[in-house]
Image (cartoon, rainbow, N blue to C red):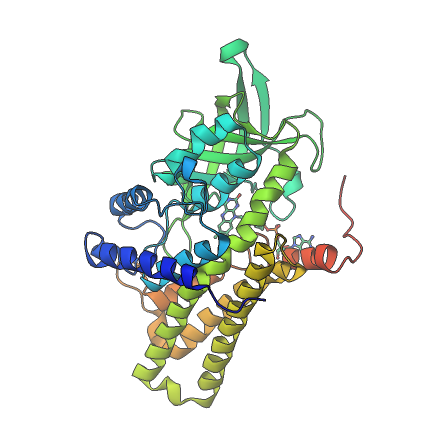
Length: 394
Ligand SMILES: Cc1cc2nc3c(=O)[nH]c(=O)nc-3n(C[C@H](O)[C@H](O)[C@H](O)COP(=O)(O)OP(=O)(O)OC[C@H]3O[C@@H](n4cnc5c(N)ncnc54)[C@H](O)[C@@H]3O)c2cc1C
């Protein structure tokens, strides 16, 4: 196991850190520390384009599609420096971390050429259409239907149904969707993975306001929405396999670099505790120390996973990563409000929250999206420990 980075990787770190610092103390200084999902939208879109122009948008992708062919270690380093610099949360997240890697892994050459460069340039944005009112953890219960209609060049998928909790759908140009394409099929059979344009009359997006005050996610209705017949990733009917590939990206190595952001949050809690004297409370001190230890554990687990991933495989320990960080961060949010006391309950008149109360409110979702903690435990039991599979419908 490699417990650090090589000199070449450290050189990459200082180059990336230098670029980020120049941008965030120069033309994008107004975006430094921006941790909301969507405030200052126009500036955030400019930021995405600036990342793209410097080829820092999707560094792990092949240079042919706008990336830098960066290694996994370099991707983690960039994510660390990104958070250390206080760069804004990325509106391009869904395309960069989920749609793009899925298309790279499973898409045709034509799909790669059509979809990857605009994501890398920060020009096209994506959302994820998996969940439905009756299909969350039980994703195989998807009911949204798509049928092929028309002839020749006019052949299209026609899509009807409802998705829910669709993050960033209000800004998205495209949606990668899991839909049922075989009449009468059930469970994970008969599903397909479609790429669907969002800006068309058949798509309606209704924001859902969350307790953070933001409407990060939405209800999304598809009523006779269309997409080209060849905008299916994998074969029709092979959607479950592709969708699981995307979820592996969502739960896996793409999250390894986020600890620097967690470090910033823990440091903000420590600063608040120093400022209001809570740092003298023995129980708070213990919880701060515990949070620090959890962060270190994540760091070394990440390095261990990185070592095994670079050796060509992800170790079984990787399955524990999502549940660990999500549970840790939820506790961190609780610690933040306990340190702040009643001040944690005060929002700006416009219902805008400071970083730490927003951490508390937002981190409640960490143990839900990308698979709930209960689902992660099932995954650990079945895939890592080889225990008998949970009974499931066909
Ligand atoms: C902030 C946020 C953003 C999201 N963004 C998106 C998005 O962009 N696109 C998208 O498609 N979805 C998105 N989701 C939805 C997310 O994927 C689902 O909420 C999640 O999969 C859980 O599904 P559910 O909400 O239907 O809960 P349910 O599946 O109904 O679960 C309810 C409870 O039952 C438990 N449970 C369910 N099945 C089992 C089981 N087999 N064993 C043990 N316990 C079980 C769950 O753990 C949970 O506690 C987002 C969710 C959140 C919170």
